[in-house]
Image (cartoon, rainbow, N blue to C red; front, top):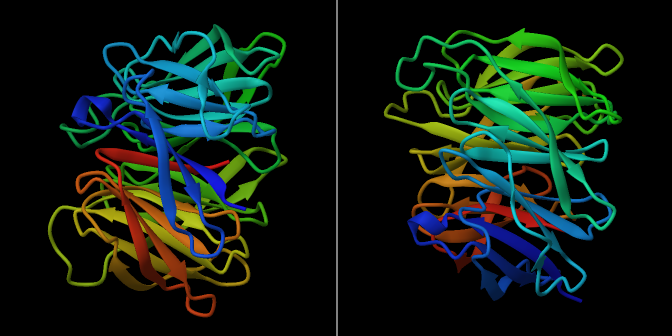
Length: 346
């Protein structure tokens, strides 16, 4: 039986908003079912733990929003209430954490918003706003804080936010009763590196930060008891000798922790990275074409055997079969989706 995939795109750039597609479990092929533009610029998506609700940011300025969609009929997502303001501009990322929805708001001053989730999955009132502070040496991109991602750590206790503008990762604790989010620790990375996204190793003891301004992944140890990150090394996601502008976007790690893949916008490639058994040593193995232009998002299917790239500028979602021995993706097909930004399996 075919499953369902949800695809976000920029309506302001000609996208269709939220696209629903089926996925063939045998081939990985996507077939579009329909679109809804109920929410402008739904650039990033996530689902509730029970899979009954889909959440989207509305990446608009000067004030963005978040929205909830019922998946009672998975082929036809239905908007649950009106989008709720996040009181911050250009929200780029979101996560469900301890009964709340958190959004990372990119526009200065970068911030993380906490919204209530009601019993039916809809969004309630905004409960708190945590504004980041600081800047970085890149005058064009780091004139102030730019929160770019927020996620829950594998233990479920900590909310981790990544800020491109301040070269830092903040580990926060949420009070479920009040909705207040407090910074417990802040990790400063190399100046000017521009952290964008973060992903944890399946074993839960290492984290990998994808840096947009310097085309490297920072490998960190992670102590879930203390909520502490410690950087140990950096790995380049471009081959030696490659020059020109490149802005990595997303990083994903295989379910077995043997491989990772990074999306290179500019080089228009997927970097294939190998991991050792400890999860602490990362090596660039090769790069392959992303199948389009400007890969903004990468995601594994639930089986971990296929990789999907959201190529924003060429307007397509391209999927790849992964060689289980080498980790190398091989292009298998694509679906046209104008101004695509995000792909999510539910």
